[in-house]
Length: 361
Image 1 (cartoon, helix red, strand yellow):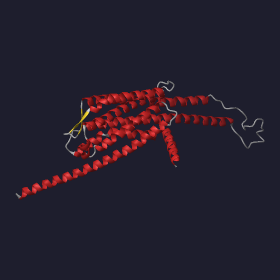
Image 2 (image 1 turned 180 degrees about the vertical axis):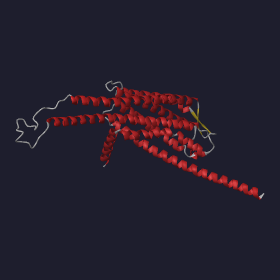
Image 3 (image 1 turned 90 degrees about the vertical axis):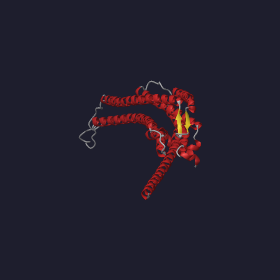
Image 4 (image 1 turned 135 degrees about the horizontal axis):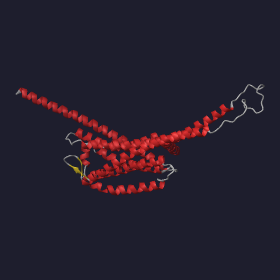
């Protein structure tokens, strides 16, 4: 009897220790998730807000600027609307008090509408970069057409995603939002757009990179050809007409060498201007490519999270929820990479902040 009693006490103690350890792990994950989401909310608010302000005061907008502005607007509202709702879902006690069919419907609408909008915009930017690089003389996508496209597809996206309000319902047994038929249809549409975006982005940016390399070679060859057609000016070896070489030997200039040196300076200057122009195009294109790849990767992570089976463990449920929130990373990544790789945006942002600071002081 004593052995059985001691065995029961030991088992009870081990179970108690496991519950305590599990509770500490859950609490640490909850705090970490709340901190990460809060920092993301602040970052996306400041980053996307700054892009919107800079583009608002930008008087020389092109089609790419219009698409970038629309992308920042979608990211801005996606973060503002979705991240606070994600924070409410971290603590299960708070989540159970606010969870409802209405909450699930609003959350589904924000996720589907912003994700579809961002998906379409990233595809449009990829096509725009391709046309601007490969067909620079063809004014296919103008600023006015970009405005019309962004307004039209935004209205269509909102109308199309309105059924998302009833696409999910709250499950009292699984403690999460369950997807219905409408949600499955929207997921199917999003998956198709996702595949189109992925292949469009890969193909267009490969073509853009190849075109940029070809242009560099052609321009460099043209500069060399133009310079080789120029002949140096003939003249006396000391550079002074009618001068006596025997009486003035102190300053001898070779006209051929001087002309060659001047032509080399012109060549290097032209090459530097070409490199600077191409570097701007390359960095902007690379920024859009990285932003697109982050979007693709974040959704892959979310779909992996959806494949994780439901569990009664609070830790497993929280980890699954954290992985399922990965698409919101794009709201922060877009302004970060855009600011990092666009020197023109950094210059305008600094000027805008300096102006605002001077007005306040």
